[in-house]
Image 1 (cartoon, one colour):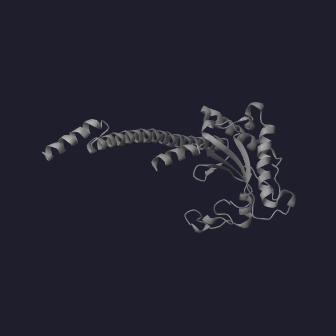
Image 2 (cartoon, helix red, strand yellow; image 1 turned 180 degrees about the vertical axis):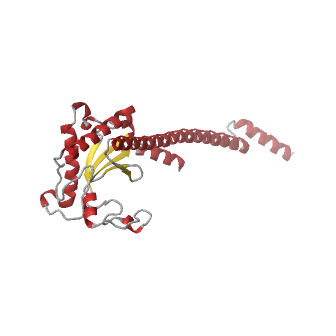
Image 3 (spheres, one colour; image 1 turned 135 degrees about the horizontal axis):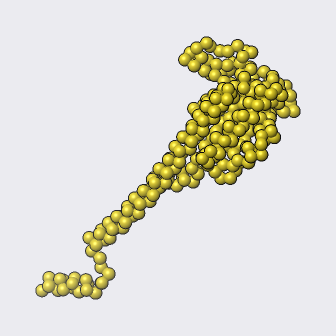
Length: 263
């Protein structure tokens, strides 16, 4: 009799508590929530992965554009008997001292006709190659870089060799924009975000060319089979101009967004 009453009492409690949920129903609900969250995460990761892949494709495209650009400039100038060289993993156009040289302790472009014509031809080829097929869209900054030999330049007014190398770059830059035709003005070119494309910098004697005095490659016989250059040759070759091309990169926020989702 007591057992019947107990069963009846339990049944009555179930009917009086419509909010009673069995353990299996709770687990089923949690499973549904987990599945939905997993699907949402997978969709978000897929979207971020696509954005990441697109960013990688853009970097690869920019790298290829830079390589093509430098190769084209090199070929065109060499065909004009201006023997420039590509260095630093296809990022720098090196202008040798026999193309555009500087006297020791001087930053002005020599006034001889050959040096000035070489400078103009280099500027024109740069302009044509950069604007061709809107290649500038894949570039961030092009640095006109000045360099010196290791002989100390004792002029505190322009900060020694650092100032001397920077003024050499400025001299080339100013000459381009003063002597070239209006439709070849390099200072009118902008990058992918509308900022001036060109800039100048100076490295003093800190980046000597391979196999010259102070370079780290001298010990590698495959690079420098003849060893280090003479002091005179080293000094002459390092009084030079390099043109460094840097490419656009995805914004930092894009990297951080993908990293946060993955973590």
